[in-house]
Image 1 (cartoon, rainbow, N blue to C red):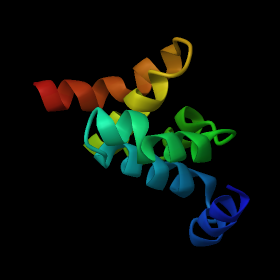
Image 2 (cartoon, rainbow, N blue to C red; image 1 turned 180 degrees about the horizontal axis):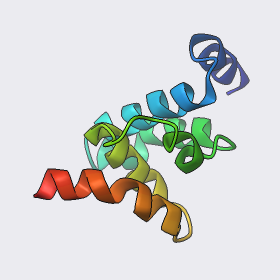
Image 3 (tube, rainbow, N blue to C red; image 1 turned 90 degrees about the vertical axis):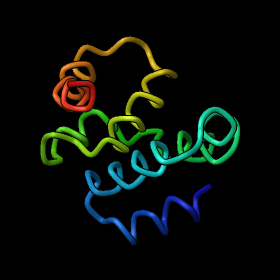
Image 4 (cartoon, rainbow, N blue to C red; image 1 turned 60 degrees about the horizontal axis):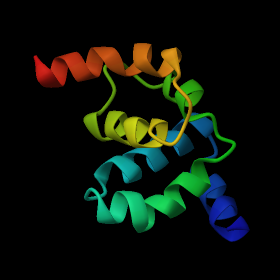
Length: 97
């Protein structure tokens, strides 16, 4: 896992860019098999310690739909976070509106 983290940090030195890349990856995976049991497990492990919500706030709004889906998939594993709700609300409204 350490080698993956090192390569990711080399490819994306900015933590917000790193989080965005991982969230985009997670949000692009087919549900449920890959997102919950396949590559998604790897992505969630790589997101550990990155504070994806805090990093995603640095991204342009509205967020890309894959980033939002990645955030929602990540959040499914976390306690309720109102900052996350506030962050994804504009994009979710735009997608559903």
